[in-house]
Image 1: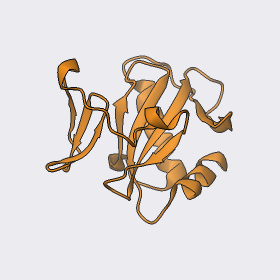
Image 2: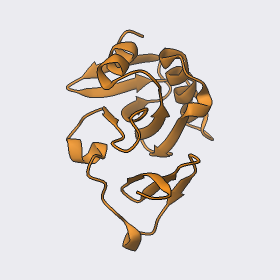
Image 3: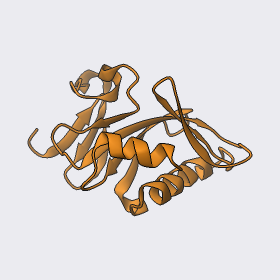
Image 4: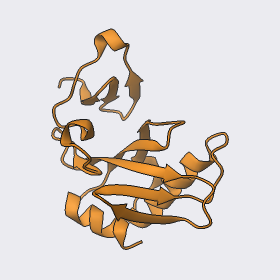
Length: 138
């Protein structure tokens, strides 16, 4: 992997957590990406065991904030409007609170304006099943 921490689709994450989007011609498929796992909501970064990809489906302007699982997919209802990144910052705040980690450890890497979003999260001393448990017990 060299100077990169992870390569996922057309997104490269450097060791300093800087996100770089590559051109379509430079696109590299990473074998352990959430896309290759067929609907896994949380997957571990093979090169960094303390980092995870979390893919969620978001409904903005909901009555209340909530997190739930359905058909192996993770859903978030956020009461913030999807205007000027308010919903995205609310999601990061909710994930931070639920997982007991600082907001700086969460990066939105895909889906800035989409309902399906992928986050790159740094969590030490937890595995995928423990993260599922924390998120579904919110």
